[in-house]
Image 1 (spheres, rainbow, N blue to C red):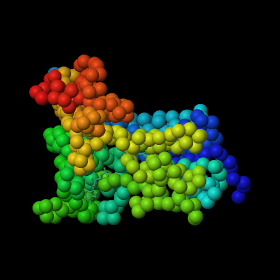
Image 2 (cartoon, helix red, strand yellow; image 1 turned 90 degrees about the horizontal axis):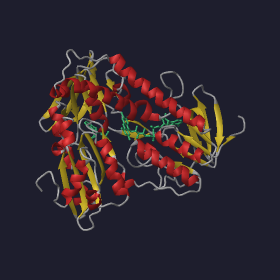
Image 3 (cartoon, rainbow, N blue to C red; image 1 turned 135 degrees about the horizontal axis):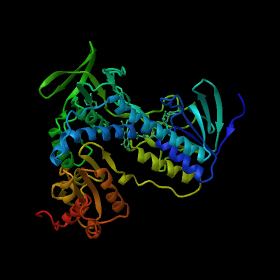
Image 4 (cartoon, protein in one colour; image 1 turned 60 degrees about the vertical axis):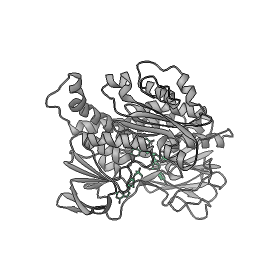
Amino acid sequence: MADAQKFDLIVIGGGPAGYHAAIRAAQLGLKVACIDRWIGRDGKQALGGTCLNVGCIPSKALLDSSKQFWNLTHNLPVHGISVENAKVDLATFIGRKNKIVQQFTGGVAMLFKANKITPFLGTGKLLKGNQVEVTGNDGSKQILQAPNVIIASGSVPIELPFAKFDGKYIVDNAGALDFDAVPKRLGVIGAGVIGLELGSVWKRLGAQVTILEALPDFLGAADADIAKAAAREFKKQELDIKLGAKVSKAEIKKNVVEVTYSDKDGEHTLTVDKLLVAVGRRAYTENLLGDDTGVKTDERGRIEVDEHCWTGVDGVWAIGDCVRGAMLAHKGFEEGMMVAELIAGKAGHVDYDIIPWVIYTEPEIAWAGKTEQQCKAENIPYKVGTFPFAAIGRAVAMNEPAGMVKMIAHAETDRILGVHMVGAEVSELIAEAVVAMAFKGSSEDLARIVHAHPTLSEAVHEAALSVDKRAIHKAN
Ligand code: FAD
Ligand code: AMP
C-alpha cells in the first residue's frame, strides 16, 4: 500500500456533526479530510448523513406538504375558502422531498469544495496511531494519517427482533419517507419524535394511523402539561395513540402485517398495510475501531467521551449521535464546531443543559431546560407561568388557537429553568427561550422585554408575566 496521505484532521462521517466539524476546522486553517459512504439517488456521494438524507430535512418536507393538504380540507373552510376534490399526487409529493434532499446534500459538497476539504467516498476505520483506513465503495483501500481524528459515525434505527425490516411491509424511517401509495392502515411502533412525525404525515394524507407505545405515559420526556395538551390535539385529529401497548410480534401475511401487542386488557392483534418501527436509534460503531486504538464504547455501543467529546486517546474525538446525549442534529453541529475549535487551540464549549427539543407535529411541541417533573424530583423550588394560545390574537387570527406556553422559573432567584410549548410555530418561538436561558435570564427579564403585537411570541411574554401572576390577557 502507498504511504499514508497526511492531513491535519480526518473526520469519519459526513453527517451534521461531521460536516460542521470539517467546515469549522477548515475555516481555522486546517487541512481536512472527511470520509462518508452515503450514496444518493443520483449515484453520487450524498453528504449530510441521516439528517439530510432520511431524517430532519426529508421528514420536514413531507410534514410541510402534508400540512398544506390537511389545511385544504380541515382549516381553510373556517376561513371561508373551500376547494373541491383536493387530491395528492404522491409522485410529485415524494419527488419534491427528493429534490430538496439533493439540493442540500449537493450544498454540503459545494461547501466542502469552497473550504478545500477533501471528501473520500467509502468507509473509514480508525487504526492505532491516528491512522484511518479508507475502504472505498469500489473496494480499494488507502491509509490516511492526521494528528487529530474525529469520529462522527452517527446512528441507525433500532430493529426489533420480532419485527425485522423487510423494506416493503415493515419499514424504518427511510422506508416511511418513500411509500409509493398512501397506506390504508399504517401501524407505528413507538410514540417518540419519529413515530409521531411520520405518523402525522400519512394520517394527513388519509391513512388510518395507529401508534403503539409500550410506556404508560405519553411523551414522558416532555413536561407533563405539554404532553397532555398535545395528546388532546392528536386525539381530535384521530391519530390513534395506544399507550401501555407493548408489541411482541409482527408477521407479514398476504400483503398485510399482523401486529400482536398486549396492554392491561390482554393480548390484541392489529392488522395494517404497512408497519413503521420507530423505537429509537442506536449509535453506529460497527467495524469502526481497529485493534488496540484505546477508544472505548459503553454498554449501548456509544463511544465514550468527556464533556469536550475527547475519547481519552491522544488526538481522537467523537461527536454527534455516536456519543452520549440527545440524538439531535443541532447537538451534533455544536459538538462538531466545539471540537474543531479545541483542536485549533481555541476555546470550545457546548451547554448541554439548554439544547432545544422540537417535535414538528401539528401543533408543534418544543422545549428547553427542565420540566416541572424534573424540578420536583430534584427538589428545586420553582414557580410556574402559563399562557394559552387561545388568548393570543395572532393565533386565533391564524385559526391555530391550540396549545400554550409554560415557563418555569426558580422560586428564589427567578432564573428561567425551563420553557415548554405546544402550539403553532413553537419550533421558532423556542429560540427566544434558549437565548434567555443561555444569558441566564429571569422571567422578569422576558416580562419586561417588548414583544411585537400581534405575534405568537406574545404567548412567551404573557407566560413570563404569568410567573408572577401578572399576565394581562387571562385571570391569574
Ligand atoms: P448521522 O447523520 O447519522 O451521520 C453519520 C454519517 O456517517 C452517515 O452519513 C454515515 O453513512 C456515515 N458513516 C458511519 N460510519 C461510517 C464509516 N465507518 N465510514 C464512513 N462513513 C460512515 N434531529 C433534529 O435535530 N431535528 C429533527 O427534526 C430531526 N428529525 C429527524 C427525523 C428522522 C426521521 C430521523 C431518522 C432523525 C431525525 N433527527 C432530527 C435526528 C438527526 O437526524 C440526527 O441526530 C443527526 O443526523 C445525527 O448526526 P450525526 O452526524 O451524528 O450522524
Ligand atoms: P424515541 O426513542 O423517541 O424514538 O421513541 C421510541 C419509543 O418506542 C419509546 O417511547 C419506546 O417506549 C417505544 N417502544 C420501544 N419498544 C416498543 C415495543 N416493543 N412496543 C411498543 N413501543 C415500544
